[in-house]
Amino acid sequence: MLAQRLLTAAIGIPIIVGVIYVGGHVFTAVVCVILAIAAIEFVHMMTRAERPLWRPNPVAIVAAGGAAALPIAVDAGVEWPPELAIIVGIAMLYILGRGAPKFALPWWAAVLAAVAYVGLLGSYFVLLRDLDDDRNWVFWAVLATWGTDTCAYAVGKLVGRHKMAPSISPGKTWEGTIGALVGGLVVVVALGWALPLPVSLGEAVLLGLLLPTVAVMADLGESVLKRSAGVKDTSELVPGHGGFLDRLDSLLFTVPLVYYVAVWVVQ
Image (cartoon, rainbow, N blue to C red):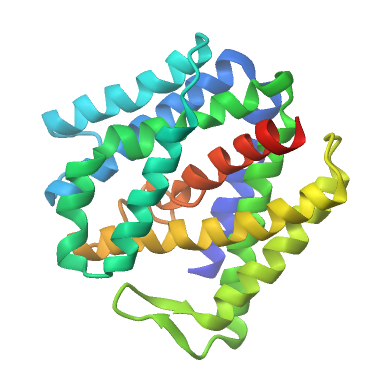
């Protein structure tokens, strides 16, 4: 499993970095495709549709179209009010707080569904990429989230002993979570220093405290949804990592976070 994860990362990371670097309509198009697939994964999980991604059910097709349309709207100049992202985050925290797998999925679907969860939050990739036409904001958000996830995985595998939420995600430990919070802080601050961004040390530390916490909560939130649906991964599209939605779960919340830190705090 580890070898498979590393091979997938070795292939996928340069591609993603290249797409972020190129930017423009190419970046928007790739975001649309990824979000559309993630929306299909979400609907199939929600409806327990045991069918391949290349043969989605009609509801999944509608969700995919809606999710893909939102980044296009952003690219055309539409900007979402911050309340929308905040509502999504509050809804996720509410479901996580209830912690009952049988409760989570129907309510989540009723409140937000695939278009809001995947499409709305995913459209912030484009908003962040277009911020001062600076790709480095996206690099900061994506690399910091990956770094946080990597710290959690590595520390959890090496020294993880105490289960954090066995009824939600049996593999997560308190040691791994501490690794995510501490390691994520270091990664965020280091990237803030390394990337040519107009951020101070204090602003980098602020994001370093917020981003790992949001990443951990978002990851746990999606785990609740998967437990509700009785699945381990949303699909097998990404070898060793699950589906696109499994890889996006934290980013769907950390990217809007970085965007609003950039707009409200830095700028």
